Amino acid sequence: MTSGASVKIATWNVNSVKARLDTVRTWLSETAPDVACFQEIKCTDETFPTEAFESLGYNALVHGQKSYNGVAILSKRPPEHVVNGLPEGDGDDHARYIEALVPGENGGLVRVASIYAPNGNPPGTDRFAYKLAWLERLNRHIRRLLTLEEPLVLCGDYNVIPSPDDCHNPKAWEGDALFQPETRAAFRRICNLGLTDAFRACHAEPHRYTFWDYQAGAWVKDHGIRIDHILLSSQAADRLIRASIERRVRGWEKPSDHVPVLCELAI
Image 1 (cartoon, rainbow, N blue to C red):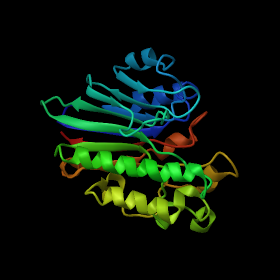
Image 2: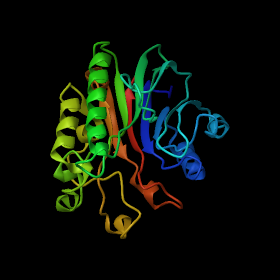
Image 3: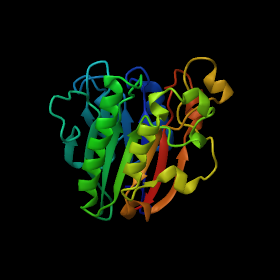
Image 4: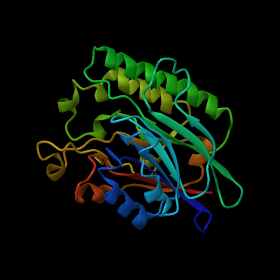
């Protein structure tokens, strides 16, 4: 991958890859991550703009869905052993999970997943029950992956605000599915499998956000939330060099309401 035996891995809910194509390509060109995990691409596999990313040197893996959801992994090296969809998904046609092994330049491998967890609003509905059940399915799958004892990087929009420090005004989110006690507990159970929050491992300061709503001047006022996370297995966490939130991208023309989160591992 990159010289210096390190790999840069990014996650970004692009909120329609075709609508944000120029923005996404500009960021990829400037930042040059080795792997980029996208969520909410909002297109089918066939209509994903693969050639636009191949021209930048990326291989594209896509698990899409018309108009909604959809996840993708871009990788500078050809990925292997692709998994489309979260296991135990009988009857679940939401495109929310894709996973692959990405080779390193020195023969090492990193298992990377792009995750788009359900929003779940409003609480007390079938949508909220689906969110919690989906997070438990993810938990069980991660347990299986951890038995492989390899560098594992779980990227995505988890639609979880982990703590009051991860939102501007906790009281404003008390009635939202992203901040319900059950939601946060499900996320803690995932983290407690032995995973490390890459951003928090490098940045202890509160109120660093990855999402600002388009409404009510949220971006200008910095009324944001942190719901996009990169979780690392112990084998990946031991290799963590740095992590960052690419905040500046939210101020670009035609931005997504999310910004990329980036980590760099010594591989």
